[in-house]
Length: 624
Image (cartoon, rainbow, N blue to C red; front, side, top):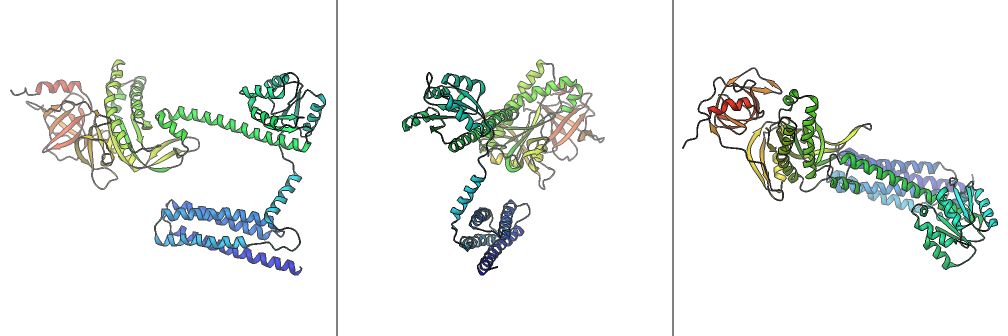
């Protein structure tokens, strides 16, 4: 090896070693950053992006060092790749600095841009030594390589169907021969009229059109093509023996894709035809993509339209960021509604009539929920899970959820009207509301998935709903605290809820103010005292669906619409599901929801005509 080669090799090794060491030092910093980030922190993914970019830089440097024929072209490509990667490293370092405040972590991150600047200065000073007289200008070298590539391989395009239009037979044959050498299928037309006929029947990929022809000339053919929605998509190259700049401009204005002067150079013709065919292929693929996109949007409208309002579906389609198909944390208001004692109702109905009852209920409720721009997440038997705040968040999510709950209770009159017309039982629903963070996104597998929400606050809403009686709405403090509308509140009580250390205070919602102005229909809230309590009335607690064997003797003191006031000689935790025996043959199911001194209020959850008939004669006459 001569002295020049040895000097070149030593210089390259030294420079590459310096660059490699700088990248390794940045990689060590990033590893330290990763060790400082808490597990599950969103910044872990950002740091991993930095790691991968630095690994790619080390690999690129290694490949360049192994290339014994390294030249300015290779160095220019190396600089290009390294600058792309270092840009990724700096970008994610800046994002991490914005998102974190921990001093040690930030100190490590601030060192990375400083090290990056030193690295780039070394990279900019890196040169391949000129041992001979050849030009070492990087741009010129890349251009030489590019030209060699063009010389070694012509533009590759798929064979296409081309239409040559010229009234001169010799000109048509010459063009056809030139084009057939490129493996294209060539068809011919001797007039403008025949050109339009062939275009409509054969749909060629490109037309080469003579400008001067008897009958319909090339310019008039262009005008006809432009007026036809299908033909105007086919590129047209005008070929004219007249070197007229004004004529060329008129042809381009009329819809021509290119304008060539006779005699046409074969190489130039091939290049123009190839470029136009490639552009047409892209346009065809774009149209296919748009057609598929429209098909997908129709599918999305059909599927999501069953659960979301038209307005939200349109926003999802218009905004690519409107719906994250992965999981994301969102603050939402969750609404759960459930038919009271549906299990008992379903046992007494034939399957077809049970489904009819459910469909009456779900059809009306879905319309109400979508009217308040809520998302119907799922139907679980007779239950409805609706979400306000996903997939699209709005400032009034809690307000709309509260108003929707009241509107759903009001709409039960329409549900029961339909049920009555079809000879189906009348039903009541309870509704629970809660606001908090959930994980929203596509849940399932590649074979089957759905958009939904999961998390503690969804489960908490279910437990709140289980505390309701028919016709009642209960809301958590979080929902009421975030509401901006006036809320008419009823009774409040504390419940012990699984998953919470402290009792949860639930509030009965009776109505919402403007702009909704919705109010639950007032039931008869006046207590009617009993002249005498029925004998042998006892109460048992329910555990799930099972009635406890222990029965406590109680007295019925008063009744009102849908409720009883009971004297119970025991301390019971509220709310409590109970069954009252001694009034009617089947017992009376309800829920203890309120304690007034030594008395309890029991909301009736099953309507018993027999119980009402037995209690009515016992009501004391009003005092005058």
